[in-house]
Image: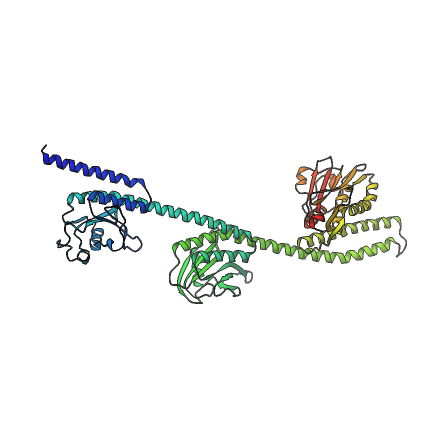
Length: 586
């Protein structure tokens, strides 16, 4: 091999080695800013250029953007020193071919270019950055002081390196986009967690709708909007009319009264037919769903099981349309709002049913009291023989009537109490009093019934007074219910024990009996209205299954708790608590 051939071979090996070395650096980072400077420094090192520039094509606008500019000292170039021949760069990006001129001042292709003349550019090389079959920009190097600096070998190196650099830049771009998308997704999930908490915190329908609308406006930058729900109205036996009732407003119509929109409305009809968001430009008051003229209107369906149940409408007075990200966000918001809206609607339905039940119970108890009072009055007159003497059979029959009247009276009183507690109409006259007095009075009133069944009644009180803060009458009612049950469900010869004691800021009362006990299955339903066990021992005793339900409601309404522990065939212990007066600051 001759000496020139050896020299050429060594030079090629050196260039390939240099290309390998600088190319291997590209895999050391995915940070786009760091990578761009690394590419530029490596390009200058390979070509021996004075300066180097990376120009990328902006995907949105198609403009050429200089994203990196470095000199041979690995310093960033700024200001006037960034002047390059953009005509050459545009040609390379457009045609996809690398370009070399050893003296642009005398090159007929470029000598007339304004930038070549103005910036006194001489030796220039430019190679396209090609990644995944498309040109994403160009690598540009030059030497403004000297001509004949670059040759074809330098251009070949630049082209080879540019192809590898383009892939590294594209990977870093994708990584940045993925990283940003992931960050946006995490941010959105965090935001939706807050939104879910707020939406589901309220069971008031209008409040839920207003919250959903506020979030939609805040996150899209809309100028106003509304939320409406679809409703139906019967018109005769065979026809039902559907319409949208707008329930929440923000913006110009914020103080508006509820508005209804026919399903034939052009925009609403599109939303219902397509079940997807509809964007309308330049809408007047008649064309908008909520009557607010706007440059742009966005209508997003609220869907449940793919059926449209409502619409979120947003208005924007600027000419810019809502972005695809804005629309996607409102659609996801609508999906989340659906659950909260349905919960609020169910809650309203339950409340309406409770109100109807309360009204019905109030009416029934009132209407029953009137004839019951008359029947009781005349029965008492007959028993006192005010209408003439009675024989034994007549007196026995009237006694049965009187006992059942008492049972009916208890039922009406219990129903009335439950109704007033549930509707919040029951008044509690709380005061400080000695719990011992109430317990002893109720036990004394029940002593006759206890003795009739030959039961033992024991009362254990604390050594000192137990002053509580509660309604004296209601505490007596609670005690009466618990002692009456103990009396009824304890066989003759059994025992009933009452104990009063204090625990922390509460007073506690225990009523224990040696009666029939309660099974575990029945204990789970014990405080449910109208529940009674199925055993014969329970069914043979009179009762409506309301007493324990009333006890629980009365105790809880006064800040206490009621519990039961029992074993079938071995008796039961019912306990309830009530606040001590000192714990209430009395």
